[in-house]
Image (tube, rainbow, N blue to C red; front, side, top):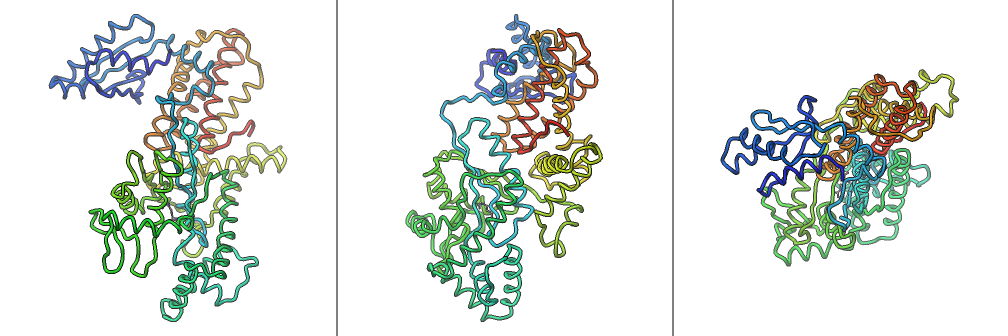
Length: 564
Ligand code: ARG
């Protein structure tokens, strides 16, 4: 086993009698070596000693164990960091390992044989409303996490928890009947307009409100006509959502929306009352999770809420899917809801060892987006947004490759435009409010999808020029080569980190760094012009970097091109 990270951790373990978690980071600054650990600070506290002394002691021990050619240099830096520099030989051996395992090298090594089940709740737009920018973020982040978890060896289930039930449908049915509209050519936008118009008038006219309430009730009682209308709304909306999913190449294993859980809600409330977790309060049923506000699971008129369906969904996902981990990719605005939910299902004993995580994200702030919004910033048409990305990408393609046919330009523009849109989202820390700026997103020289895609194209074009013959990896001695190989070796580590933290930007940043190193290599080291012995090793390196770039981009849901 020649995976240096593991080997250094093992050496440290041998030098440290205490049961502590040993973490190796890759320092930002080159002068601090390939790996660094802060373990001396942790031990200094435990041992009540000086961290620098502890570091020196460990470093000395590790040195005495390493007769091999793994470590070039161990250095202790005040106040107690221990830094490791690998030998070229160790790095060359990583390369041999990658060549042997190919794409499997990039997957983290699993500790247990049993596959963990992760359910990812993402996208989840609302029926009869246009998909919003927040839903787009959820879709992009959720799909990336889906791909990454699957790649890492989890049993991964993608579930689109559509907002397809609730009192808004009473309003909509009333409005629909009032206008005697037929379903022909009705779009989600029309439904939204009907809804907005009716709600406005309803607030001044109690009769309209009464009507809407009646329709809701009828729908809940299973009235044939209302169910039929609701189903129509559902179909129209889903067809529009699926158009967007198709362009974005997003896919779900299940579409278990709120309405799916209807038959289970009564039972959920009953059980909560029986277990003493919920209590009646002014006619409603509430769970007190000690967060100041109660979690209402049934209203005084007997109706159920978003909270109730979510509790039922947790129960279902654990029972049916055997979920070990459930991720909710939902904007930060719903934090309190999820805190309430997670507390409640624990109180109800539905959740034992399973982990539930609200994978939060911030808003999208931008001038460029505002320009795209209809009705004074009310909502943004995602189809317009996506087509604008493609149009802008096409301008670039046309400039770079004027001789291509229009069809080819379109095909390339689609991959670049959508890639730019996704990468913009995935390369920024999901917790922060992200910026959205076309020129930055499409900048061929910056941290953007087109830059990464273009780097890939460059590598592929080298590979088309010469085939790879027999080679010896120990010919790769240049710093740019070794840097590149070392960075490749960190791929599985990045994947592992994402399965623990749910931050896809770690992978985006990793790929950006890989592309930068690949470009340094490409610009400073002759490949095709070098003599045949070394050329073949360099070509093999180019091939491996291309494979890593493609694998990583695909995990983010971004496609690569052979030419652009
Ligand atoms: N449909 C909801 C909305 O648009 C999001 C649903 C999130 N998922 C969940 N299980 N609550 O706000």
